[in-house]
Length: 272
Image (tube, rainbow, N blue to C red; front, side, top):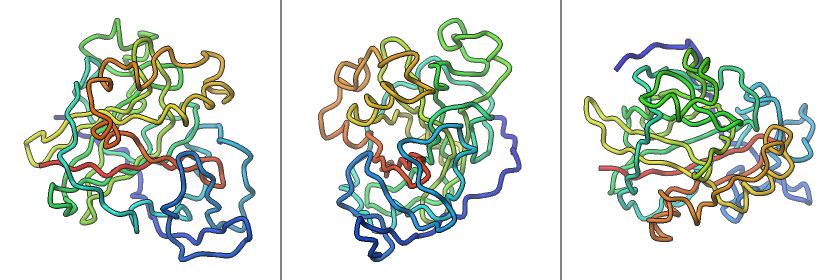
């Protein structure tokens, strides 16, 4: 594998006080009762509240230090080995060690957190987590085994947008600044990931989103609405429809909207 660093600083994530409708502050942790797509008033007095989801790509992730830590008090689920799915034909040989994987592309900004644990629910430090996904238009980048299929524009072969790797700390967590992926025919919206420990690839799979979250975004968000809704839902996706409801839940990202309109998406992944 070829690694090169983009020289980006590590995220300085920290707990933030959350305010409810009454303005009273709670314990400063993510409310476990929040539903996908809920609004979280992360405390940032100098920042106005955005009405709806943000635009402008990762440049709109303006105050991530104030975002709540979705792993702080969230109960670790039964740490069942997460389901393996196909890597697909859109992989590349070059992995970029960087937190911001967008390369300046537009889209709904997404702060993506992945926590890696073992089947005893203990965090795994030192694991490399690699992600790759499409841009808002539904295209991958880079030199792939199937550029005819993976790239909407063959000039994208010179790029590496929405690809990157990070290594987990002692808490088992990695963070990426990215954008909500777009769709391409026959697939629900998804993010590929691979976990590597040492020289061994221990899990390859895909994370997805609830249709309840995705559908209104693709109906109205300026960076996605022109293409219209995805032609494939999670329920009809040829990869995800083979999983039981319980297994699919393990690969469905937990999503909350921050006060700046950024999507905070997170998941705990259990591997061997």
